[in-house]
Length: 465
Image (cartoon, rainbow, N blue to C red; front, side):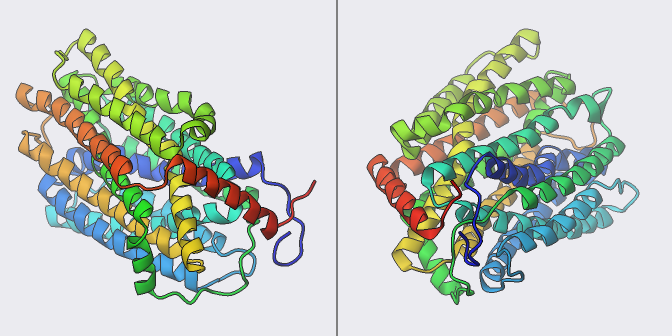
């Protein structure tokens, strides 16, 4: 029963699928941008990698700042009596659709300064809209259910939603390349299709998810300084933030480099589809068993084991004779599948961990500040995207990447491969070390937390039989 006395339906598959729609909607643009925005602006629009680097850093600094601002607004201003989070998602999703389309508008005719200004302004507006969707969406997790097992299932389905978007992006090399060259017009058409699809996906989220955790019918009076103190005094939340920063900055942000590996090292951009599919095989294989594995070994151990194994495989890959032929391509794709196990494990359960860390803060302080805490976490996540994109761009420039060249030198092409593997390894290593030595919620504490959460939920609301 909610705070108006209305009976609520039980938590179930409708909530899981509905919650997955949110990350599908976000990732239709996010994955497209992660994989193709750098290539689109350097190969098609003619922006230099140096200009790209400073643009993305400035944009992400703004993105990180607006995370905290919007997170505070979500906690302080309840703009609808029915829901704390859904109205913000609705407003943000409209902007997300429009600015994604504008971001991939072919503007080759602009001057170099015009291209830089256009990219900076539109991307800055896009990140604001994305934040207005993603911060309340991430916080929504905590009001759907208080049961940690159900939260793990929500995190798993959120990963499924993101995974569907990833699968669609995997297919794009077959569409956006013509004779091994990226087509600006085709990328733009994909952006239009993805944006329209995301609009309907966000509508499904709003219709399918039920907020059933009772909150006091008031706006929390929480200062930014108090929230920041809560964040930095929460060791578990700091650990998952460090791990996330490493994964996003070095693991996720390097997707464009992998496209270059196939475009110039293997001389077949279309084959990158197979590499991306192989990289996500572990995600599909692990998802059905994630809740059971977490129940047996705990979230921390699950991530540490997966991360350690993947890091070791990545180190081995650096020394393997991966030649630019079919045999070498098969070896490279097989290696990526194993290296990405650690990243897939992290992706499956990271949101359940974040929700647990935020709930811990509430139980220690007695104050609901989900939006603000999630916003600070998102601040560092978005900052990582900016840092990662800049590192990737500058690293590519350092190893000889020529933005407008139809063919790269053999040395540069080989360096793309080494750079991509190295970025994956470093990101996974930092993630593993952070979760092993800083994250302080062990298996026993997780079980106690689960039992407490189940009891709290029974007291908070009544489900239909």
